[in-house]
Image (cartoon, rainbow, N blue to C red; front, side):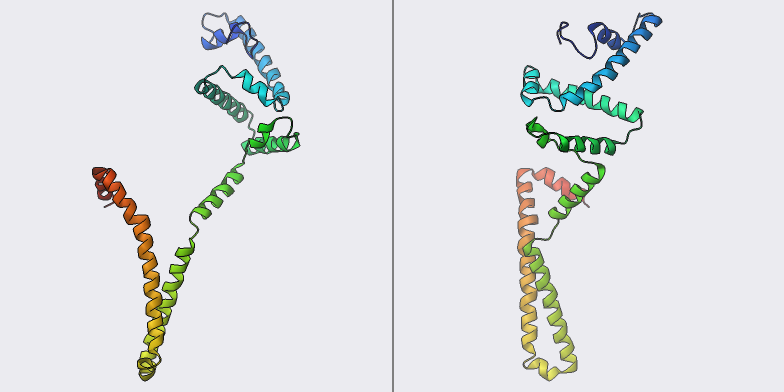
Length: 224
């Protein structure tokens, strides 16, 4: 940063903070620390205005900075904010809720990126995780169908087994249809399970084995 550009800290203050006030007299150190505290306390009020500062101005402000460097500076800012919040015992969710309220109160035309900012409390993250987890592991239509066929098939076969004890003549006659239907349903459910096992288990395993035989075998061995 050029020395002629104003910043939160002066050039001298940055040098002294960087050197941890090495070779600075105690009186000067206390004076500088007091001035730095004043600048920090006053500077934080500017964010009230910067919340709605035009997006284009932020783009121009950092257009010459490499993204890697900007990412590091944003990380430093995030850590500094979290330290201040922790030192003053301010709940993170309370800060997020206040930011959400401010976000809702601002005219969206003031800064388009405000609509893209997603802030969540711990409860918000938990609800999102639960929703995504439920969506990921929600049974598919084929899974529900195979489960239904297997249950019906087993039920029909149990009925036939009971009829074979109670009314063997009926089972050998018209009652055999119940057994046939149960067997068809059972084999249908097992067929779907087999196809899904081939698609989601066997084929991926074969692809991993072909791509990295030693790694695939090692993974199988580690599971024993």
